[in-house]
Image 1 (cartoon, rainbow, N blue to C red):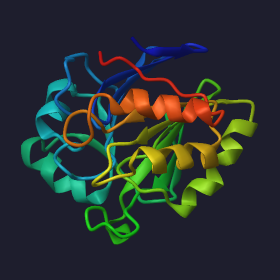
Image 2: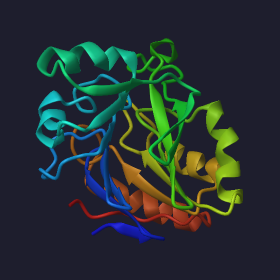
Image 3: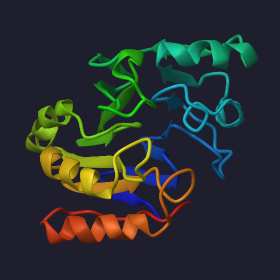
Image 4: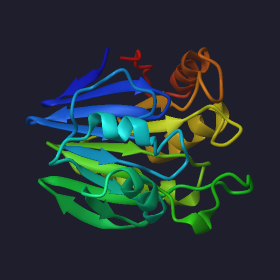
Length: 223
């Protein structure tokens, strides 16, 4: 079961993987062990870790015209198995537009944990399509850059935030709730739990804690 608004459909495919459909376009973010063979027009990769830059999944959903948007450290892994591929390399705080999709990249990193150093240049994405802006935070802690995102809910857009909650290598539930409060999105959806880190019950706990603080949050069922 997904989320639909103004012609944009958002589906959770497990872990940090999402599929977005709009105006005939099919977009994936961080596909990993997904149950889908629907071909992609665009694939967004936040960083090179195996559970985000999954070569098997990327190849399974790619077609000749697919464009992959990714950080430079993903490039060599992808081109080893697919030489001829459309690729757009990005860095934190880039602002680009591709085929009508406005793309802002947001830094994604750990403050003290060693798993995602800021120096790696890994990212989250804000994709703005059809008056809806979707923030996929990537693997990140609660970081100062999130305080700059409140404006996306003030531009006449529906602003959706997809936040990791599993702890260990990313924010835990409490930190993600604080991030949700700072971001001030219209709706917050948890991710990165119930598989590699965190339990399957974490999503429900996150939503309950959000609602107790006046934050609109929802668990998406895995497709």
